[in-house]
Length: 301
Image 1: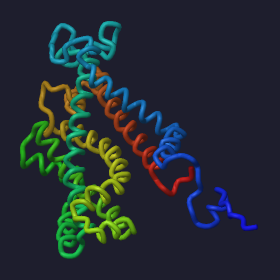
Image 2: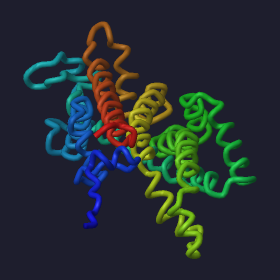
Image 3: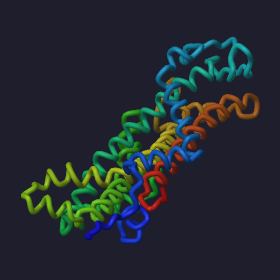
Image 4: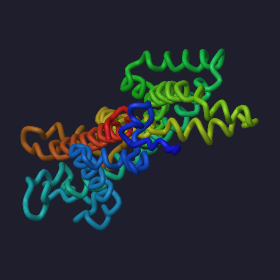
């Protein structure tokens, strides 16, 4: 009597096939992310800052731009939890509104970098040849400059301001996204499903948008999260130098710059925005590390 061989999950591993777990790949990645306590802490910090930014008009106890010279440089107390600055403005209210500015600068800057970086990297990796050589040599030139100095040079040419600051952050981040995207595309473009799509007459646009980009999006997501931290830190640094947001905008880097003059007498004026920058950058870094571990296909389930 003829019997059928039944392949168990253990046997499938020995034959080189993936073990059957009953869960989709994305559910497995979500499970890895949930088990990463550091990533969950980072996610909680990021969500907290986002909520504060969204509901700043409702949460802020005072108008962030309203001056009151009678209470200038007041220490933290029950009425002003984080004290007041050199113009008598409530520091807590300015921190809440500053979260909006920092997140907006980081988000727009990273979005610019993703659009142009992924486009250049995908074209270079997919078509190769002369186009690849030309794009990557330009990318190499940009990467030869330190990121902060390149952003400073761009803002110096365009002029200070939030819009120019976003453009500068986007431009100096493009090379990193381009290189990551190119590497991911090269590792995918010779796989069987790409060759099958070509054999069936699939156009270059269909292959790129339907197959290549969806299958190379994981490292881009991770890099975007980590780059948010870099963008926020760079924006604060440029604003500290007077090349970013201009007074009286409640931007954290600009608050640090004006508060350093009162570091000895009223340390809260610069300590509070400095801590806000630190915790937001830390949150995005922890979240990015957790996403990298969860999306890495080499990680064990």
